[in-house]
Amino acid sequence: MDFTLQKYQEFLKAISCHKAHRIRHDIDQRPMNALRVAELEAEMGVSATYYFRSMHFNTYAHVIKAIVSLGHTAGYHYESLTTCKGDMEAAYKDFCNNLEKLRTIVPIKTACAHGSPRSPWDSLDIWKAYDIHVLGIDYEPMMDTDFANTLYLTDTGRRWDGYRMSVRDKVPQYQEQWVKEGLSFRTTDDIIHAISNISHPIHKKRLLINTHPQRWMPFGLPWMEEAILQNTKNIVKKIIVSNQ
Image 1 (cartoon, rainbow, N blue to C red):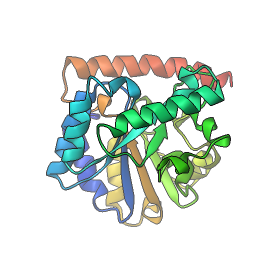
Image 2 (image 1 turned 30 degrees about the horizontal axis):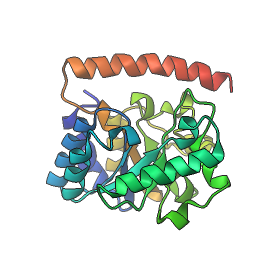
Image 3 (image 1 turned 60 degrees about the vertical axis):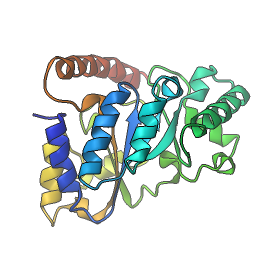
């Protein structure tokens, strides 16, 4: 069964056989799920980066600290241009203010934009007018990754080929190329099997892996609720993408 903690553990074991990979987690909802994933990774000797939205800074500061104490890195999952309704100057100030708030909890040197699929604004656009790196941010994954040599794998939409209905969680200039190279996967098992095959083209790429821990949990009612919710969201996102 996919998107369980057991399946994620199998996924981590497989990924450990890939020579060049980086794991990131976007904490959109359910920060406590993120802590459980962080604990599992720590037990397996895996380190990852956890990106937190500003709405979680106060209530879940203890979770952020706990995750970093396990040997992981925290980052800011910003959506400032959406929050500020497209006002670029206000968005930059919002980003700076929230960045400083998060830095009162843990050290922060990385930030990644939240997709906000229903928003007409892409928060990555802030950096067309400003320089994120002068703020002590060393790495913005969607800006600073060499996607010519790095395959982006994300569980957006609770599936690994969700780029087809994703508004922003994708790399448009490379998605079709990756499909032609046999680097598109539907399930977690598909990725595990690919990595298990040493001749598979996945071994020719570095990997940037993005998961949303809210999806990964033991099978039960919350698991089923998440599955239904994501399937419903996918329908909405597919309509948005088709109208772009």
